[in-house]
Length: 290
Image 1 (cartoon, rainbow, N blue to C red):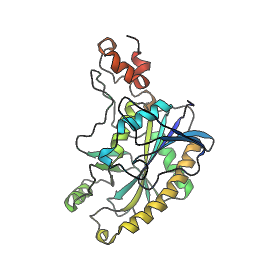
Image 2 (cartoon, one colour):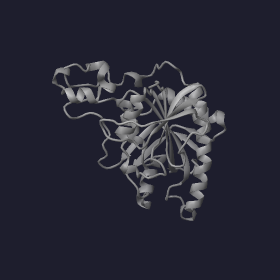
Image 3 (cartoon, helix red, strand yellow):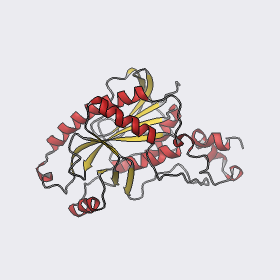
Image 4 (tube, rainbow, N blue to C red):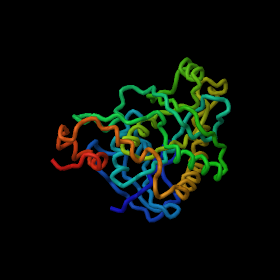
């Protein structure tokens, strides 16, 4: 299997990357079950990439149903070192208008009981997550958005909620009072797992509409949101293509060594099965022999 350095995860509205050539579908199994679907590997701007539709073919999977561990582990198996995640979000600020794009730099967790670690089963690890997005990858995504002609916003907090229902008005107003910027349902778990897998991660957050705090929210129809999604998806593809062309081949960020001081369990105390299952992630630190 050819090593693929760049992963792309497409959210609502972004179910394919039309510019990818030399396509091949790769179906993977992982110790954590099945990913959302096959990975489409190919070439984009001269670089090898792997695309995954987050919600599966035909958008079948709710945010709470996503097998985040399998999705990210599959990227690791392919050799991915960078993940560009495109996601539809609601806006919590007047300044972030529909069709705008935000590159957030923080998360706030409002999910409930989602599994968001590869560790456990006798292997304890705690990665640093104060800065949940790769600073270098986020900077490239922002600059690529400006190059593509999008209205870009750099920084801000992404509230990750459980869903599938949208916020109540009280919740939406509370998030605004806390200074939150955008709201979505999927990206926090991806970012946590990518950090554990030592993969650089950033979010290209595509604003579809204002959250329900906005006085015009009730006049927004599904058709209007879908039309915005389609426009956003086209822009997202342009931004991702620009970013792929700009990505350095060698990484110099902290993401590449996130596990160096994170593993607490002594190698001799780890089970052979856990070492085997997690070899793509921890093998360089603990080895897989027993």
